[in-house]
Amino acid sequence: MINQTAWADGPVAVETGDGTQTENVLIVSENFGTGHTKAAEALEKGIRESNGQIGVHTVELGRELRPQVHRALLASYLGMIQKVPGLWKKVYGQHHSRAFPRWVEWCLYQALYSSLADYLMRYRPRLVVSTHPFASSGVARLIREGFPVSLCTLITDFSAHGSWIHPETERYLVTHAGVKDQLERMGVEGDRIFITGIPTDPRFWESQSREEVRKRMGLADMPTVLILGGGLGIGRTDRLVRAAAKWKDRMQVLVCTGHNRRLKETLEKEEGMNHPHIRITGYTHRMADWMDAADLIVSKPGGMTCSEAIAKGKPLLIYGAIPGHEENNSRFMVEQGLAEAAVDDADLDLWFRRLLSKDPCLDRLRERMLNWRHHIHPSHSVNAVLNLLTS
Image (tube, rainbow, N blue to C red; front, side):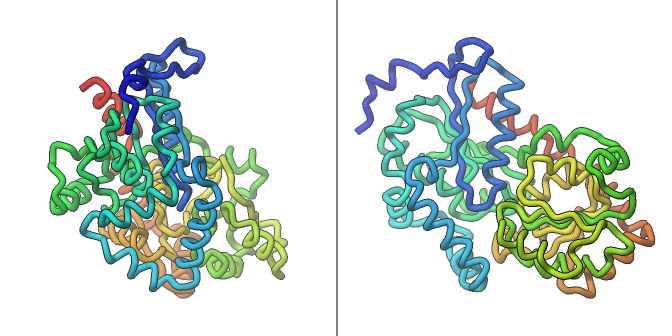
């Protein structure tokens, strides 16, 4: 049972340098894909900048509460999507249009969140914002048991999966009107859904000269492709890099392997990769600079990567989507004219030729992204959270 008396003592003061806060917001995430946490961190930064009197803290919940179990689940997830993607697609599709059954929620709670109540008592937040469906599930269960906290869920893809849905959620923040329609078809009231986009770091909204960024990073001033495998460095990144490397005499190839150190080391040892026009790095906090240096981004379509590319107005070529949520992201991006998709080496070569010939199609992609990006400005999600605090 929840100790209502202890909770009634009020929020714990969180010292941020701006004075004592009177409201606490806890943002919870999971790193089954780094975009969930990057969205949480961008939201935290936006809240701090908008209202310094609000205490806000971000945590990857499973890794904080049950690190060993979390590592095992993450390894299982990565193994499934890389080795048996068809199985992952089947698992994903089973509950695509309906909420998790209670027994699944119970298993998640026992595995990851059995000490969540004690953790929340440390912060006594008025509002919890979740950027991952597992974390939403854990908080929703506590609310059903009487925990006096509000739950807001920020969906970090361009489609909605049933696992995001919980009756205890007061507000859903979604990427576009189509996701709102999906949630309504699954029984969520329309007045609980707000279209905000996925919050991105302010650095992706800053304009920098491509030439100056290249000079600062020690890069050549020539047609440049940026290859991304997401924060976890998964997908068909190795095959993509090899296809691009064939063009290294005519274009610059930048590669970010994320947290996948093995992939980085493997690529660096391959014949032909030690070339002045090829730069390989691991996970970086300077992704905004890397995007500024590029003329074309080739990546699997994670929700955060797509949002960052839109914010930067950088043409995006989708390759190697994870079955399920990323396939849905790809479909949305292509249908809206915000990206193109490649399925094989022939498609990749076509787009590399278009880059080298300065094909107008790249300018058209860039223009559509810049025209659409106001839909995803970080202020939308920040304002939605602040309004929920005052409602």
